[in-house]
Length: 212
Image (tube, rainbow, N blue to C red; front, side, top):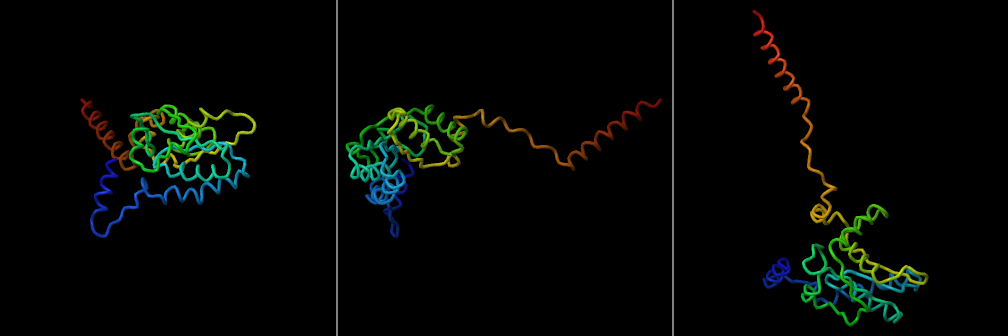
């Protein structure tokens, strides 16, 4: 929210223009022209469900509109986090008031996902599928799996819009076990030599003092 406010303030200055992905119709239009046709083609026109996380809502609005025009039976699923979430890049129902591209009447379902569900699935994707998808991707998949049964005839497409390396600080908060306390760096050779010299000097003094 703070970044958006700064951007809008800057856009009022001379020689600046804000493209504004939260209200610019070119956002969903780009997905209508590219993402939707790509999914339709790559699934051989067999896609039955489409799910995406809700951020600016350009992806779900544009892609969903294209797919619905091809087949009204395709289910469009919008996945959002709960209020007070810690999933960067997506917005809760209250936060979605900030985007003009949130068009719930064009979606078939809205589903809520918690922090724990999103990050747990994010971790599973990395461990079991070797997919470095970030927490918003885990959230989108978690929401889709709540609604779409694993049965013959269902072909679910979920958009993974991030990778885990963009959100290292978030991952550290939610998976502290992956980041054990940092160990002190190993001493260098010069440090070892200096320590050995000190120990030799101490030993020599002790031996000298011990002589009657």
